Length: 252
Ligand code: PGA
Image 1 (cartoon, rainbow, N blue to C red):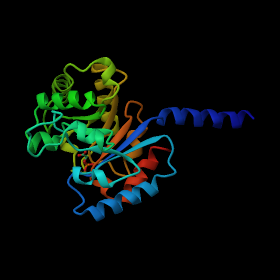
Image 2: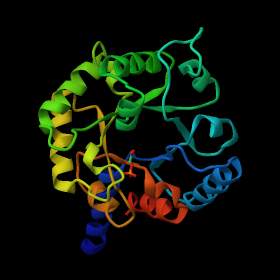
Image 3: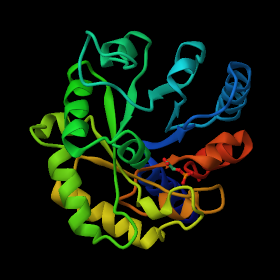
Image 4: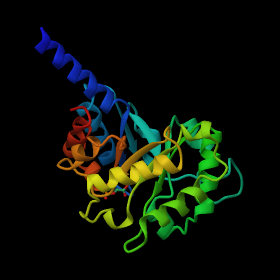
């Protein structure tokens, strides 16, 4: 009986350890057609149907948000005004109205190609929270940049005027720029240290996830770390089979 008790205890520890993990797919500007988007989404939906206790979020391009149903959705960007003459932009209210729950802000590609500054990122976080969207705030140092200094700047500016209560609805994605789409992933031990640093700087109650060349072979090594509470997956999220494996690795 003692033996059986041990297994029950071990299982409880595992459930607590993996509780509330979140696996987020960032499809970026893919796939090319609505038909392919639906196909990928439906495959993932079917593949994760039996998975318990893990939040699975798909962030497709804006145009596919209204046609994908049955999994949690996130947008890849948002504007920081609710309505008005802002050609080409999408407001947080519009996303909320579609049933979208999350929104990526400050992704390194938006910082680079759309000139998104920390001040803009901060406005987006504030406006997203105002309507009840959960911002996924991406931070991470560039190649050769001092890690802690880079993070300290992005976090303090990006989260300016966000209260301790509001911070519970923010997810911080640590994505070192040099690790995104390169296959050169940050080691799980380093990512764990950074997650600890972020929690210490911001709050123990903020959720920290890792992103940058995550795949089905390395996902579990991140999720086994206690401060890393989820993953943001780019390239490998476009392969349904791999993404399902990543989600399942959060359950093990
Ligand atoms: P990657 O992208 O998994 O392809 O490195 C991650 C991201 O940009 O969010």
